[in-house]
Structure formats: C-alpha cells, structure tokens
Image (cartoon, rainbow, N blue to C red; front, side, top):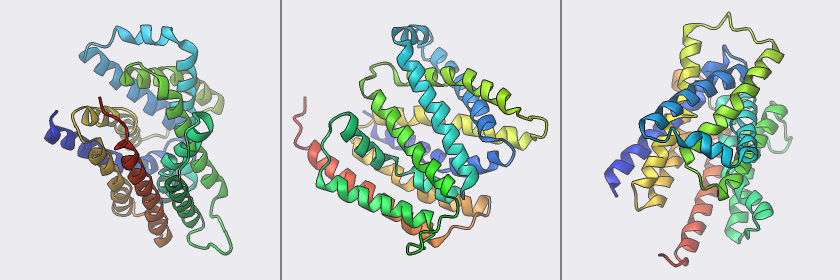
Length: 301
C-alpha cells in the first residue's frame, strides 16, 4: 500500500468534487437539465471507454453486460438517468448551496433504506444521525424560518430529497454486484444515453444558443462529476490501509464548494445553509463513529 499516493488521489478527488456545484450552475445557465445530462453522460462514457481500453478491460464490457442485462439496464435507468436528471432539476430550482447541502444527506437516507431492503439494524447512533441530518435539511430548506416552515422552492427541495433516495437505492442494488466498478459505471452511461437522447428529442431541445463556455462547462461536469473523479477515489481506496482516514476527507468537500460558489459565481450563502450543513455533517460524523466502533468487533482475516 502507498499511503502518500492514496492521500494525494483522495485529495484530488475531493477538490474536484468540490467544484461540481459551481459547474452545475454555470452549465444550467445554458443547458436544460436533460441536455446537460445527455452531454455530460456522453463525455463520461467516452472517457471511461478510453480508460477501459488503456487498462485492458475493454473486452470485459460486453461480457459483463450480457451476464445480467436486466440488472444493468435497471442500474443505468436509476443512475445516471433518473438520479442526475432529478438532481440537475433541483439545482435549476434552488441555490446551488442549498441543493448540494440537501443532496449530501444521501448517506443518512442509505442507512434507512438499508434497514428496509437489506434488513440491517438501525442503532441508536443512526437515529441520532438521522435526526441531526434531516433537521439540517429543514433548516436549509426554510432558510432558518422554522416556525413558519416557508419553503422558497418546495419542488426543488422535494427533488433534492428524491435524488438522495435514488442515489442510496443505486448503492443498495450494487451491494451484490461483483463486476469491476469502472465497467459497471460505464455500462450505466451506455444504457442511459439512448434514453437521454430520446428525452431531448421529445423536449424539442434547442442547441443553437449554447456558447463555447457552455460546452466547456458541460464537458467539465462529464469529466469530473461523473467520470475521472470516481476513478481517482477508487484508486485512493485501493492504495490505503486506512479507509476511514481517506473517507473522512470527503467531509471537506461541501465547505470548499460553498467558498467556490461564493467567489466564482457570486452566490450569496445564507447563514442557515451553513448551519444546516454543519448539522448534516454532524449526523454523518456520528454515523461514522458508530461504524468504526462496530468494525472493531468484526474479526479480520
């Protein structure tokens, strides 16, 4: 294991993920959500196809899909098709700082869904984590106006929460997937692209007004939200003996993202967004502490 290499890869992934909320907003200024999904998916698929060719996994792509086509069709329809379409729509309706903070509660959603679909027990620490995180979501959604429960965009909040259900559901479906993770992600894009193009045609998408900066922004999203960064993160986890330390770096991402949103696109960060995000992160930390304690009781091979 190469801990220095793992740390460098993980930090690179975290920094890149920190930029995507800003990139989403810049891209959505010229693209509709379905246009953005279509083009970013094509970019991601091309990058992952090239990567599979370079690392010698090209010949496994077709065999992996044919081993369980219905399963990979379902995965692709969930992610990237439904997940990113709904997430991009939430970003279109909400300030990016709010959308990304609410979406960050997906790990808590995963805990609840794992209990329902996988029969995993929810412990006291999980309930505390859920309470903190979802209270944080309410604080963000109401901009701190808890007594009146006034939502600036109820639809945007609902879509952001639905995106957490889809993302958590995607990972639950992946729990028994033994295929190469890079190929699995690639297959999702290959499945989603024809459906996304069909939705663009149905929507009557207009591509004439998009400038070079819009194309650059959507390419960036395809590269660093959906493509390369995922590979960097997987590589970091493979090169470390301390998964917890590497995984905890992701907690820095939303705060860096808020700084970038404020400085690059001039988005005003409401104080309640920061408070709500701190509550969500606190819930995730509580959940992590519980996980570490439980992991120590599991016999190691």
